[in-house]
Length: 220
Image 1 (cartoon, helix red, strand yellow):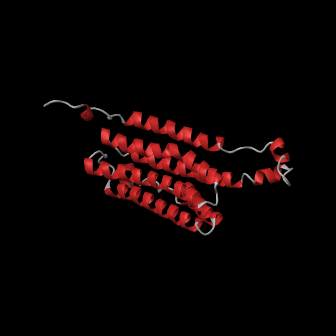
Image 2 (cartoon, helix red, strand yellow):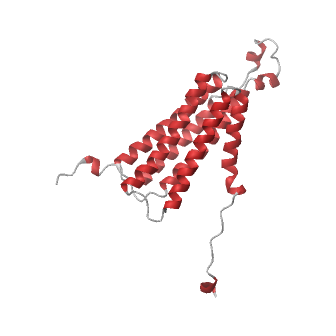
Image 3 (cartoon, one colour):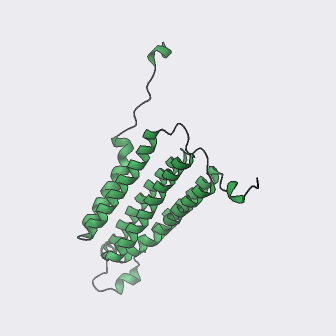
């Protein structure tokens, strides 16, 4: 039987994880580069904006979107590396699913800049939310494909896989709720998103992992 390239390509989970870490690091760094610090010259050209406090106040939409996007990327990085740790092997189809996920990651600085520049625009909000939707859909698609193709480790039980799916679906539901509220008030919607993200980030401290059970008979 003739061996095809597609059968031997994309086998390294380590290289995929390394590429993912690099793209996440660059995307998270680019977020802060988009924030333009007010200068004395720029403030003196604007009427009634001759002090640093008013200049920083104009940065508020950018700071809000930066904080939202940094938390979003952090949450998806944790979910991505956690999912990869449950894969036993990879193939070219899985690699391309993850490349699509990383493509969405690389777009986050762009969608963040658009939202920061047009903070009250519903179109800018739709672009930003669609970017996050692609992140969630591709990561969920990776897990579903891994299950169907037998790429997941045996120790990744149905309960473990369900926890991953539940986490993704609940997260996307909160993002959709926040985006919906932004249609009425951008600051209210952004606050809901940030609270959901902070809850996600603080979950290990709010709901700590249960300690492993010790077999008393074996110890004795």
